[in-house]
Amino acid sequence: MWQNTKLGDACERAQLAPEALAYLRVALAIDKRLATADPNNTSLTRKLFVTYTLLGELLREGPGRSLAPPADVTSYLQGAVDVSDKLAAAERLTVAGNEGMLVQAWQRLGGGLADAGQYDEALTDLHKADEYVEQVEKRTPGLAVNSSRRAEILYTTAQVYIGQKHWASAIEALRSAISIDETQARRDPGNQLFINEQPNLYATLADCLEAEGQRAQAVAAMQNAIARFHDIEAKRPLIPEESEKRSGHLAKLAAWQTTPN
Image 1 (cartoon, rainbow, N blue to C red):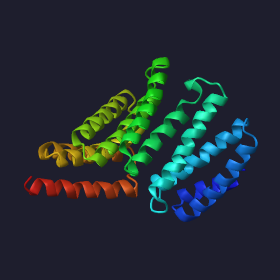
Image 2 (cartoon, rainbow, N blue to C red):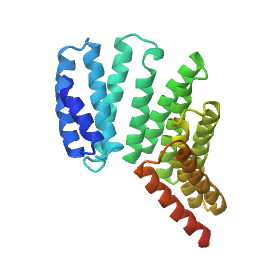
Image 3 (cartoon, rainbow, N blue to C red):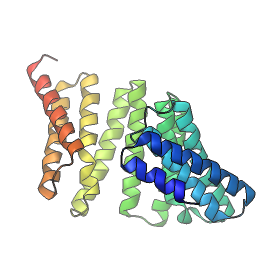
Image 4 (cartoon, one colour):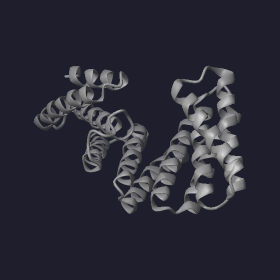
């Protein structure tokens, strides 16, 4: 049952996007058929969720971004949401049993809808994801995973506002995400997750500030993005993608510092 899904996942990790897509589409067809034939089997339903999620990741965030139109991507992400809701109802669990799956599904669907230009729908789904995080936070406050999820939702929300060119709202969301990550990094300095996200957050913030006509603040934000790469490098070598991004940030910073606003 897992063979095609595992092969698709392996191909995605190897940057073999067309092959990954072919395997995952076969896996999806099999999973849908099995889940339909045995609707009370939650293991089959969870497997269907995994395959929908992998397809969404491949086509939206992974090496397969150019292999399918946005409508196809959102259909897979919507499938993951539908399956997660079905599981939560079928298993009669509180959010405690499914919060990671539910938050992931709604947040990614929001991102996919934003990519497709469906901004109002995206914000609605991101609000739904945040509601699940809020419920979990009330029950088990202070967990780092809740902070991580909220920061991810805020970043995706900022992407929606960027798509709408609502720079002030994007800036607010990004600053909130940065505040969460910086607070968590101070609380748990050994957890690289919250440091690894900061260069991208600061660089995106810098671009929004520049678009808003706030050159001085944009320069400061880009300097912070570059500084965070130094913090990462103190713990481990940068991966090639990070090195490439840092070079791009340095070039952009130099241009901002030498050209009129």
